[in-house]
Length: 74
Image 1 (cartoon, rainbow, N blue to C red):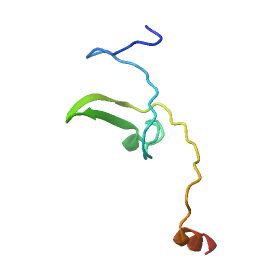
Image 2: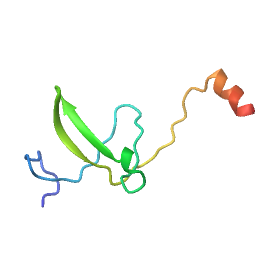
Image 3: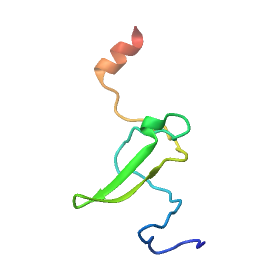
């Protein structure tokens, strides 16, 4: 057990916190199993697979389109 290992060897397991660079549609595996798994690929090779234990949801306010405003009024 290490607090901050520099790498994880093949066959080892780890609990990591990942922050996506783009919006993603994921859920915790216990809440919705089809959206609770992930795979990390690099140069067409799978380098990691796993299960999502928890999700920290943050609300971002962005640009609201005219169609969204019109649909919200109905």
